[in-house]
Length: 585
Ligand code: HGY
Ligand code: MN
Ligand code: MN
Image (cartoon, rainbow, N blue to C red; front, top):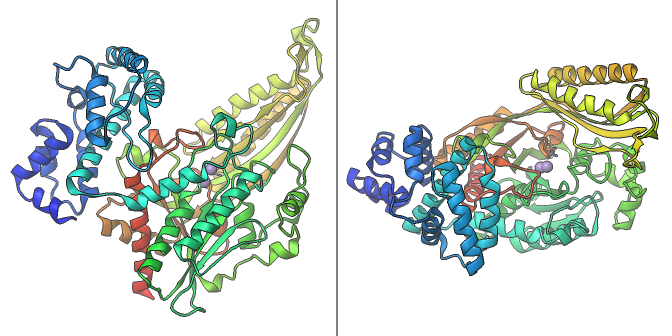
């Protein structure tokens, strides 16, 4: 903990004064948090204050959000408050008027003033248009969800005030966000023109991201940087002795369509900064560090996922080379067009020898609500859920929408509609399971034609393989019954089946020691999302570190975000993990 903070909170008087400066809460918050001392770090103090608010009464929480009664309009006061935290926000007279109008609507609907999301370096101050968009979005929130969101923003304002008070700048976290913003400049048409992010395997945008990652790795001081036969960007920082084992780490740089800017990328950039700090200090560890920017994890362009990490564990299926994308381009052709060999010989050569590695770690945004709901910046993954994906098609009979009686139809889309609700019901009845039909298409459909064909995707996940399989089977059997009853034909083709991947206990313990050293409360949690770590699990002991996401941890959505402070802690945790390995070498 910084000297300044330690001194400030050494006395009850100083502590109360600090908490009041951060939250303008009156004495109750400080009094309750004071009982929780000592605080191992600023992160521990922040987590304690946030938890104290979360455990307070609803009236106390709402009172925290209410600016002094004499403020004419919450937005104005919060604009002033945000100015206090991050500098004034510019607004045109029209925007300012609209902000006040929506701010009044907001206060009337929720009973407290709008607490805007304040931004901090490197993200530019969003300005009035962004605040108007946030206000409009949050005006639609259910009451209790908006209370949580508002309190989260209050904690963020308090965090920025504490940083200013202590002269703290989360510079490593800011660097990660800045790099994420720069990588997000590369997106595919038509998404780019809409200001949205889509980077699928080996597109021009994908290759531009690879080039940037390579350049940054060189600038960070990696000894070797190369693009491998799959398109993985590989950076190696040697140990004191070249033939020493290496720690393998990394994540993916491809994205889903209309993606967030952090998914995958954070897990490449955090370790890159770990190496940068070692190189700047001219330090060598008793082990090497190999950072991999996996080229493909999301399975968006071709109906196969984890192409990058599959190559490293030797499970790349040769049949994948013949897969075609929506334009009919084969995977092999896309590779060759991107300057890659496109041969199984080159791909097989990428398999890593497990004897040369200490294990695999991956840093990733949580992509879920748990850390934010517990006001924790980081979490340690104890297992990654099992998953199965499939694509399917139901075939009936196209017919005239106007002349075909309802009891004479063989409507493929109606069958898939039943499937969607069946999938939802099956998963909802199985604790921890999830099922999603994320893609739906009536090929060549017309407004006045009964759908004769309907294609769909199916994604089923669960904490263990048996539950995943039970839900998956239930859905498939149900769909067969629907098709039999409706006189339709169906086909279902599996495209992915990944077993649950329990994290290595030793690596988890290293992450735990890293968090304890930072004074961050340790939470072990499962991952509902799939990650390269679940593929690397086949070859090496693995464990992941999760970083809290903002906006309820939303992901695979442009709202995906995290704070420089949380990402800075992730960088510090990674550095401590390196030191933990060094101490045991
Ligand atoms: O789908 C997933 O869980 C990951 O984001 N690829
Ligand atoms: Mn993803
Ligand atoms: Mn991911």
